[in-house]
Length: 68
Image (cartoon, rainbow, N blue to C red):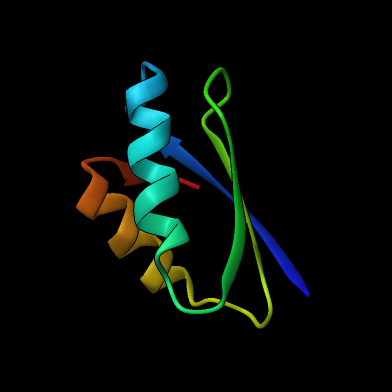
């Protein structure tokens, strides 16, 4: 199992959190997505490493941006 944490900018509410969780959670191999709205931290747990580019694309699809 692999864990990676990203910082996402622009999330302001529960709907934002849901959108990010849905898009990132839809990536192949992702098992869980935990989002901390206060800090913007998005922790992705997956069976195998997920590329940063794939996570960035999923976050962008939800309307937000990975900043770290």
